[in-house]
Image 1 (cartoon, rainbow, N blue to C red):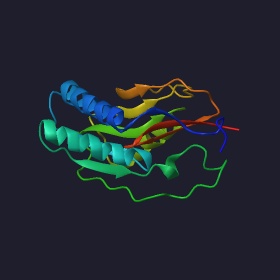
Image 2: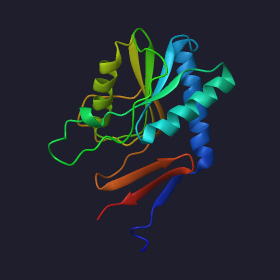
Image 3: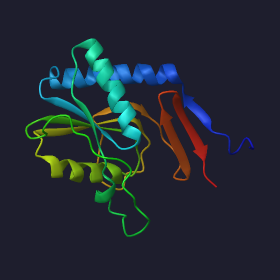
Image 4: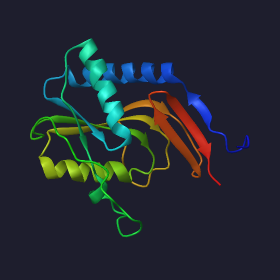
Length: 174
């Protein structure tokens, strides 16, 4: 692997943990606690982050319901590429009247979040939907803005951003 294609680490595990803790505090502050709040991770990248946020919120205040949603069938590019549902949606509580914090690892064009919003609408009518992402890399194609961000990370269009609990890396495209 040449230096040009080697992933560049921009956040380490401690950075991700600190960002998660900060975001958990921001969720609690914005919502004045956890009453009526449910965290929903977007399959696949947002699920681990929703669980991590849920663990941190439980440590700070008290447990909050955490679930996941597969928005694959709500994507607007179904006719452009093969699409296969990746997982089952698991919603721990009814969404009607709840404040849903939709969680994803990376916000890029906004199309996955839009699909997630459509998927949530199939399960109920939340009072509000807020968006939490670990990395906001810009390049939006839709008017979507996160409420809670771990790191704003300007990137080139041909770069790939990978986010895990172990860190954030950027890999240059071809």
